Length: 284
Figure (cartoon, helix red, strand yellow):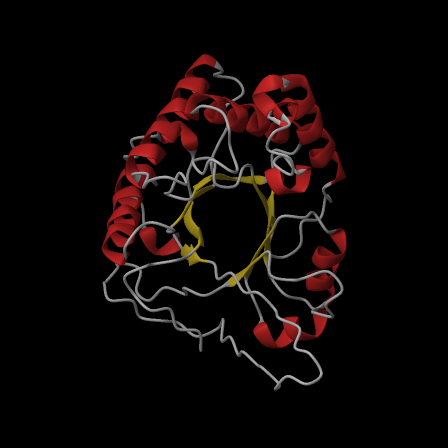
């Protein structure tokens, strides 16, 4: 295995800012994203910075920019491509990694009954959207860089109506377009929930199938391989022991020399939504 000291595991906290009424008490939450938490397991890399960013956390009209310097995030995952946010990080000289959820940017499931909007019903339309997004991304991706999380929770029935194989093809087609136009842009996936809406999904099995599909895709496209910089999932139905076990498994089997999925090019693991039902959450 390669030196794992360069590998980071991100736990991204979802925070909802609530506007209190005039008669309400002044409710405050303080988030120390710079503090390193020592989780109840050891790693060869040492301590892991587990609280690093936000997901869909800023409501419309909220003057949120004043919070950014003191919160000092290093990872920002958003469902809306917003050049102004990236410009803010640059102006503040913050090395924030900016991750865009492509499916949310497109609004793919605003109307779940409108099946024409699902990519597998119109590949040309899906690829055209990905091409348009790739072309508007700035050449200067800032100190922290930009990544594209192609689809949010494709195992959850509200966010995906097709088969698993149709999602895999959707991801690969998008990745091929993005990397053709912007080979410097990092890609993330599959960002599964681990829950279908009716029952638990075995995260490890799903991720192995996803990576195996990409390996097969690359084998048939040897001059135009696609890569997964961030292997991502959400711990919506996992307990802490399962999440830790899967992190260790994919560090050993999917990253660096000796990877079971060498053409995927995985560099990092990102737990980009975090909920562990058997442990209380603490925000300090």
